[in-house]
Length: 156
Image (tube, rainbow, N blue to C red; front, side, top):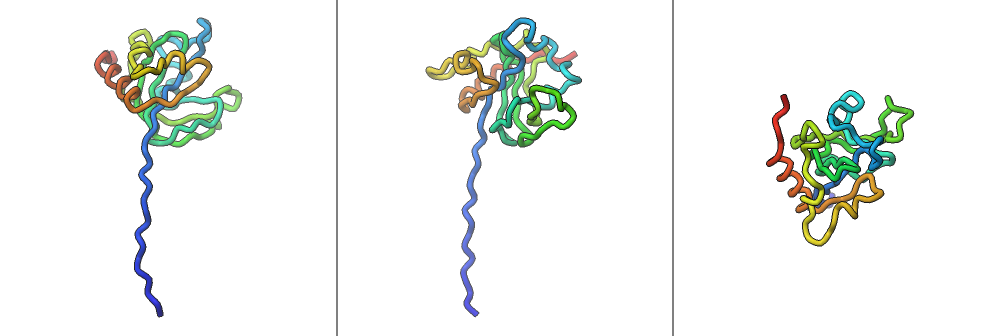
């Protein structure tokens, strides 16, 4: 019987990606309410919602941006892969990704300007137009988390 040496399998290191997720619409009457944590019973505190299956994966960084305000108000990371929400069959946002937001402001008006995340030549306000989410560089994500942490106010 011939013996074969054990060949070690290469393990691919999967690098995290970073995302900027717009919530609400830019029209004044369709913007996310200032007390965003109360929307749909706290859904957005636990999950990011999407109209189509997103490319976000478990472990990816995520930053919430309130469309129409120019403000970033929460950041953390995805704790699941995308899934379809069965309890919300009539929604325009049937896809969800479970999130852990460890850098979140209670109110959007306490957020930070999106322009504070600009690193290099990219203008995120321009990049974000007409998109529900875009990929960030690690430096842009770190800028968001650093600024959110330094301006966070305690919840009552």
